Length: 221
Image 1 (cartoon, rainbow, N blue to C red):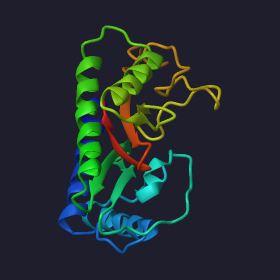
Image 2: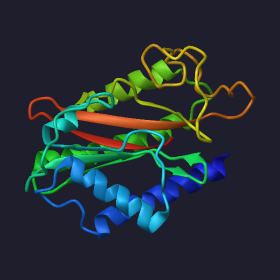
Image 3: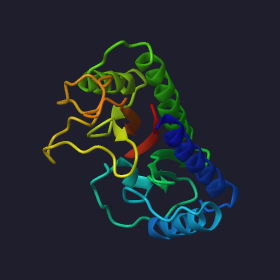
């Protein structure tokens, strides 16, 4: 399982690299246009035909929005911030990757992008040293981490599981037991119902409340 998930993530990393190398993130494009162009690139260069969650490009003030939001379509500006969140299915296995980009030289936006990435790796380092960790404790940890960097935490969750598509689902569709959620007090290191190790995505969404922008970083924990 782990090798298949890592392969799916590595292919998705290559897709994100290709988005930059092909110069897709050009001011003047709408979010919908960028989603369509990224989707076409994924099919053409990597054979990615399906995604397990909706493809997200958020620009400007929309970078404050959470996953379930569907804000009005925005146009990428010359000095702007955006993030991309994709969940490709690669050879039957799920990936989930999110990255933030800054089109100009605004120091505050660049710092926000840098901080969310640095905090992600610091959180991963902390998590890997734990012998047990409640999902609610990890959520609290990243909220406090955002505050330590001087930002707000914008996410309703801080991650979730992934696996072979479709990944494990809770018996109760409304349950948060497989999310990194403030109300999930289960140990993240416990195996699934079949005794297999669970694999978690960590997603950090830091927000600049004053300037109404957000930065996002997401990948396998």
